[in-house]
Image (cartoon, rainbow, N blue to C red; front, side, top):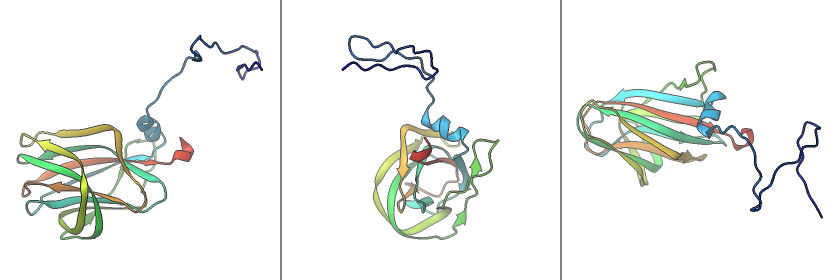
Amino acid sequence: MEVSIKDGTGTQQEAKVDAEGRVHTFAVVESEDRHVNKEGRTISYYFTTTPVGAGDYFFYIENNQDVDLTITDIRIMCAATETINVNGVSGTPSYTAGADITPVNRNRGKTALSPSATVKLDTNTTGLSNDGTIFFIRCDTANKMAHLRTTSNIIIPKGTAVALEAVTGTALITCVVSVSVIDEESL
């Protein structure tokens, strides 16, 4: 049985297939991150804080909705040399000086998106168990930005959480965490 792929415009043009079974096409490729941002579903959480001491969690995000959240990148600057661990965490957070962080949409033509998530900055969040370090970010020089970017992103399904931990602590931290709402149905 012969099968052919014809265009959808009614001209009956058939697709070219090479000897290895590959269809020859012309395509425009757009990264998922850019596509999601164009739809207004990428936000940034900007904050500054000074952790109280070594091993303190200072940023917490827990997904409370049915669709996944992804951390697409983290830009961070510390007032002193520091290592920041990006940890998967569980437990019930208890905040020392916790404050909500207002999201800013990265698509300026869209209304601010507020995913159903708990997002807090703090100086020393306790009550969390470290389920493992996903990444670490090394701030080698005081007041110089370090940038974590990964094509695989950090996926946060419903009911799971990620927290940022200052290994040394006590230095002012300036940070932007970028988050996308990934709804597979709309991609």
